[in-house]
Image (tube, rainbow, N blue to C red; front, side):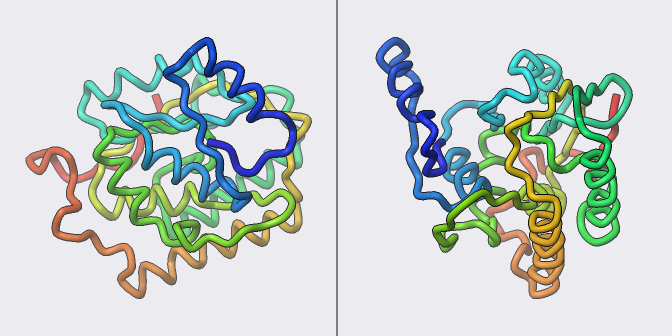
Length: 231
């Protein structure tokens, strides 16, 4: 998925398509990461679908850490930069503090039991992906075009919908490398992320995330959802 990039990313992918016809490039207007990830996940095909940051801050090889948990009955398996075995490479101290404060807010107001909602490395069973991403409200079809970078808390909305619906979620420690070319603005993006968390809570109070009759866990006989564990 391309979020209206201007750095030559699309040219690189188009060149790869000549060698690997199975690669598909989806070009979007610049509407932010949440809208673009949603577009790609809804267009994806396969029993398991994964979204990953283009800079591979989490190496694609770490997918092997996620896949076994689907065989154990989980519907969504997410990479985590917290917990035993996780690695955070070259991350500035202030960024780590920002992340922990934000996670505390997330657990207080929306998604409880997850240590890291924001790692850009998450895998879903295909039905769970279609269900959850189609019900996003913050960065859905009505997302507006933007200019400049925009870091959002769309992951919080995704996980909140998944928990509310009853999907089983597993958090797995992975390796993550801080990118020096990050577009995070500490003040502006902290405010935007906090606003997104409040909007998820407000949308829930209005019943906008209530599961529809067709939305249910993949295995209706599975036990009630358990809080996430890191192993």
